[in-house]
Image (tube, rainbow, N blue to C red):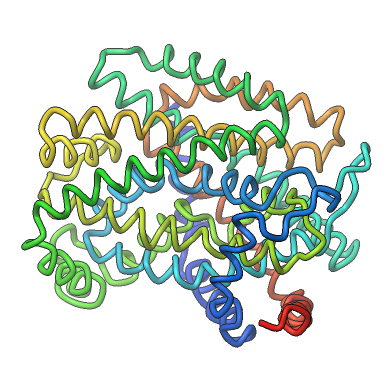
Amino acid sequence: MELFDRFWASAVDIAWGQPLVYLLILSGVYFTISAKFLPFRALKHAFNILRGKYDNRDDPGEISHFQALSSALSATIGMGNIAGVAVAISLGGPGAIFWMWVAGLVGMSTKFFTCTLATLYRKEDEDGIEQGGPMYYLEVGLGKWFKPLAIIFAICGMIGCLALFQVNQLSGLLEADYEIGRVSTGLVSMVLVGIVIFGGITRVGQVTSKIVPAMFILYVVSALVIIATRASAIPDVFVSIFSGAFGGEALIGGGAGLAFKEVMITGVKRAAFSNEAGIGTAPMAHGAAKTKEPIREGLIAMLGPFLDTNIVCTLTALVIIVTGVSAQEDGVLMTVNAFDQALPGIGRILLTVAIVLFSVSTMISYSYYSIKCAKYLFGKRVGGWYVYVYLASLPLAAVWSQNTVLNIIDTMFAFMAIPTLVGALLLSRKVVAALKDYFARMNL
């Protein structure tokens, strides 16, 4: 295990250098400028699509727009928002939150482009069902010469989309607070997730469309109550975030001894884990949406990073910083302690319920992503057996260290981001052309 841990620690350092951070940020900026901010002007239209105004059950695909967004959000609004933010603050200081905001905002355009492409370039599987995702738009949109990039994405997606961090953090919390064994948590998670995922993306969409709104409201309301009770401290919190991002400790290497680039990398890395913009996971869910209009799905997907990072992650960060809890190695316990300190007695219970919902919903959605990558590589029949590998990984990850689990996921996400963004950049003109055509037809 020591050799295993060292390998992934070295791998993540290689994968997450400044070039990847610049690729994620600058790609989002490029997408925003090339689309001339048009998607942002259609937010009202996006919510009309979300509420089902344009749904047609005869359209190709497997799930509704709302179910597609719920499936994608159930993967993004989860432990990345609770434990991931705590890890970002403990490793990069408050300044890391600023770079999470930046990544979230530019990630909206990235999500729009990648998820539009996932619907624009779909490919029928053995059962005649249209499938979408980065591996498909790389192969179908760019041709056979880019299939190696599609294969790299799928291989890394099989591993990166194992719900290792979710079950690891959940098992750690339940062990610390309720003395429930880590393996027991892993086994129960395996059974619960298995019941849902054997029903395919249709059942995943049905379950997540019910869980996501409930867990979102529960968590947001609880955080807002805490923030309201300590409103006088909020201005100082924002000062610490901005000074940590551009000056003070971040620039001179004070505090935790961090340099500016380390704060930026930490923030962007944790934002990528949280909202997954540019990583390529969400396009796999949105690529299953019932629609003949790819732009509509891109507009729906664009809402994800803002809801995830710029709202939910910000609330978590404000709660952690305003309560002044000390940094801990285990990210989830840091956030739990903040809620418990602010709302004695009930805070810990509320957050535990939210964490269980967050974790289980993410495990469900990640299973779809991971197995979809396996089916792309090995075909539906053979790739379908990967479901058992996915389920078996849950009890294993429950007993691994937090750092090892994060390093595995971060490394795989890095190597998923490269083909995802390369394909999106090369096909960006197709998206812009489709966007202009759609806006003209809809008189937007």
